[in-house]
Amino acid sequence: MREEIIKEQICDIGRRMYQRNMVAANDGNISVRISEHEILCTPTGVSKGFMTPEYICKTDEHGNLLEANGNFRPSSEMKMHLKVYEKRSDIMAVVHAHPMFATSFAIAGIPLTQPIMPEAVVNLGTVPLAPYATPSTEEVPQSIVPFLNNYNAILLANHGALAWGKDLMTAYYKLESLEFYAELLYHTRQLGGARELNEEQVEKLYEIKRKLGL
Image (cartoon, rainbow, N blue to C red; front, side, top):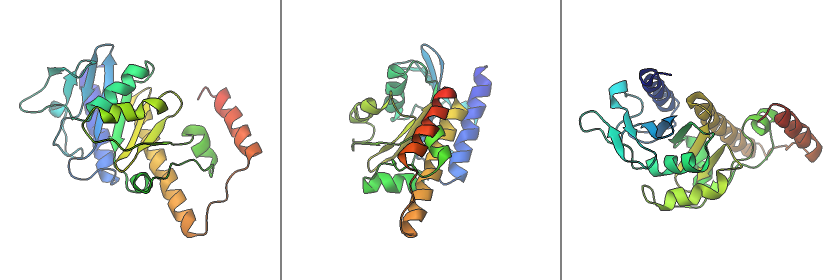
């Protein structure tokens, strides 16, 4: 796919995140791996709801800047994205945001592990909680390493959420599903607690997941 099209997709996903209140002001970041040594990413200090393709930067797999217009520079959170790409050769896109309900669970220190809905079990799975790490530092990528091989998304303690996928839409849908799952859990707790799927029901869903190659 041409870079111009991918840049437009990144801007579109940024608008979706902003419109769904997954990010405020200049929060969040998005990246797409376009080759073994090239990654397109959102710039720092820019609202994800108002980006245009010329905002998008390009780095190598180590985070070194390859291309940028004007004063745009890659997000300082790219370290987190690069770690995902380093550990997962099958992953081509990463999204990071601060969705309200998912981030509330992250701040409360509660991972999303309750099997409450078939779609969440099959398409998302459980969502662990990575320990707190200072944003923009090497602490963050190191904090997520233990979770990269076995999950589709994670909560970042006192920070937000991170999701990845084989392409940009898949990564974004994981983030959207994560937020929906978190909101469901929040509301069911107000109603006295979720009625969880039992072990047999979950195993049947895992079998479906295996057959679908998920």
